[in-house]
Amino acid sequence: MRATRDWFEDALVDVAGEHDRVVVVNCDLASATKTAKFKKTFPERFFECGIAEANAIGVAAGLAQEGYRPFVASFGHFLTGKYLEIFQSVGLNDSGVVLVGTHAGLAIGKDGPTQMGLRDLALMRTLPNMRILHPADGIETRQMLSFVAGQDQPTYLRLCRQAQREVHRPNYRFVFGQPDVVHHGRDVAVFTMGGMVEVLLDTLPELAGTGIDPTIVNVSSLPLDRDALADVLGAHRHVWVVEDHFIKGGIADELARLVLELDQDVHFGVWGVPDYGQAGSPDDLYARYQLDPIGVAGRLRKFLRRQPSIEVKS
Image 1: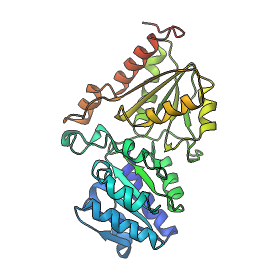
Image 2: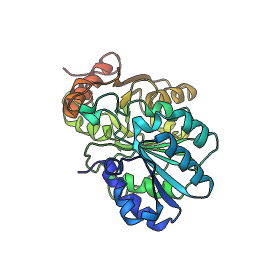
Image 3: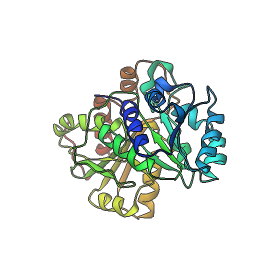
Image 4: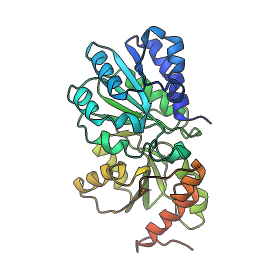
């Protein structure tokens, strides 16, 4: 088991060997964001800006305008905190920068809410030309890096700190915008992304004992393809979203808008982080916010008990 930031480290070096226009702009966090291996392998393509994310974003935007594919890496909280610079230099200029935001969600632990990537999706979703990618395992990370390296569109790549197991088979193929069904169930479709995919899969044995068999959907890239989403929604009467992010502004908002546009008759609910976050060990935090397998299973049962068309065994 490895974190997606660790899989990113190796995949970045691999794609840079295939694409000589790939460069890295660093913010004095090479060890934490896993760009140190790239620096050692391609020192002439590594640019250190220090603890200055705003400057790094401007440097990356300039490199993109000159034909490079720059990856600018920092903690997601710090990087997307420079929203003005991203808006002006990357978004508005349609600069082909890959913003790599690590330490997504609660898993940064004791460093607390001043460093937790809990509102990065909300910020990046507001930019009309920004693609968002958040892999669930190593297989998906490697495929996303291959996809991103050959593109020129502004991109936000969200990565986790916590170790995750592989949830995809070797024959999995990432397709941008496609909802990825990792478990086929009935009645309720549960949408999530990143490290929470594994958590949802771990709820299945407990949920089975109460008569619940959810379809689990990995939302690994945004914006979602409307037609593909409609196919998933059409087979379910209930839709629930769980995410390691603020309840407001994340994938739940994206899905809710599409559900309304598609005029789908479904019951809709969401669970995520309802406050600014706290400081503590990752295990304690995920338990506190009911984002561990036991907590998520309980929250899903509570959601379904409010729906008369679902019988939940106690």
